[in-house]
Image 1 (cartoon, rainbow, N blue to C red):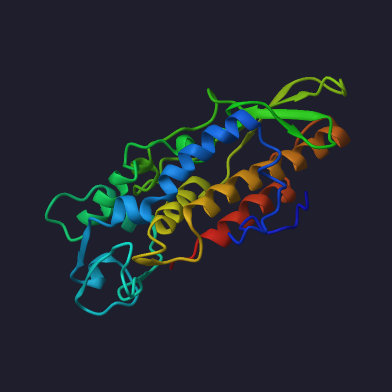
Image 2 (cartoon, rainbow, N blue to C red):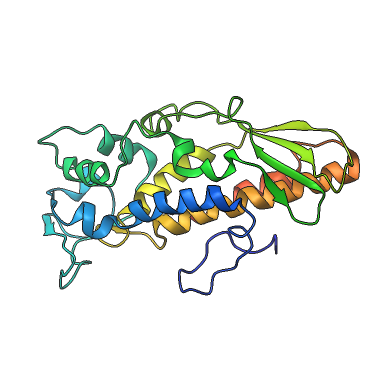
Length: 268
């Protein structure tokens, strides 16, 4: 796998097989089914919803005019007639907490129709492929998410004013049977803004074909997270093989998180 490669892929059918081919088949199939259900939100979740975003100032920056009201449907002649720039976590926090009568409540309805709500857990959205052992190619190590030690916050808390606190990503590494070089250990990483940016990116991507001008869809965001974790695991395995320990604050590890955040955080 080319570690310098962008984590976001074009959905053209020419995607690299690097990260997705490395994850466990059974976990991937279950994740894929869950992803496909959410990915069909354009027709299944949004179509019945009348979007009446009466004041773009109350929603966020972007185009669409002072009175933006559209019916998004599968055969809409111009689905970009009313669209907005990607918005930040605080705006999304308002959406998922909105109530009937609020001008952003239809967005919350569409998310709920797509099985996404403020009570959805972060790990359910992004990290479930790593509940099972994954092999780091050619490095002599396998790893999985340390579920008990990894933060798992509901997305309404992630998007809130305090961002759900500092996120902790814990990975357990063991040598593969063929290697036997080293002992099992746990690595804890604490990337800043990681989980808040991912949730906001996913919600922008959810509406990227209708209301939000955002260059990625939900499947691409999910794939980017998988590839980033695989890249991190490869870097960590290199450190284990070289030093028998891990510098959790090494520039290479920080860069893997920073690269993903810089690609997804397309709001002001």
